[in-house]
Image 1 (cartoon, rainbow, N blue to C red):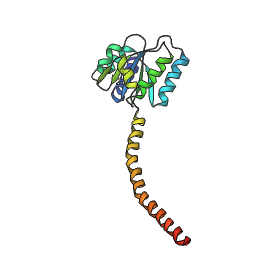
Image 2 (cartoon, rainbow, N blue to C red):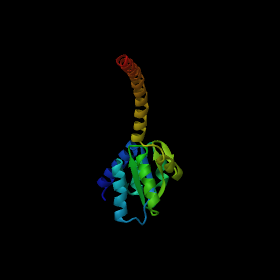
Image 3 (spheres, rainbow, N blue to C red):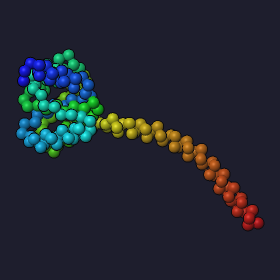
Image 4 (tube, helix red, strand yellow):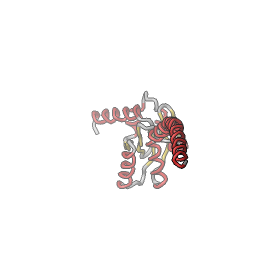
Length: 172
């Protein structure tokens, strides 16, 4: 890899570290190509990505970034799992680590906050952006349906009363 290629990789990694909601660092020694492809596919499904990069270049890219504190994790054969959604990459990494013992999560970063192994696990248990949006919409929609039901209830009560009166009038 020549100097221009290295500079390009450092720039790409810098953008990843700046724009990602969460970055998870893991060791992947012993994973097969098929297992790595599975990890990449899972990350892609949730809008995330997986990147293998030279630790030295990743450390250069981390300089001056909010998540610079995770540079200590970059030792050995490391892989970066990242996503804009602050939860998606952590969930993918955790699920994959549970199924594959060769994938060992070291930690990561969520914005300026450095995460250890337990921190990544805690982030993975948080609701995703889509789940939060769905619950907010549910909270907003519930009062509206209650109001509609309350407004419609008197009308149905009046209709049943009128129906009862009409039946009595016909019977008499």
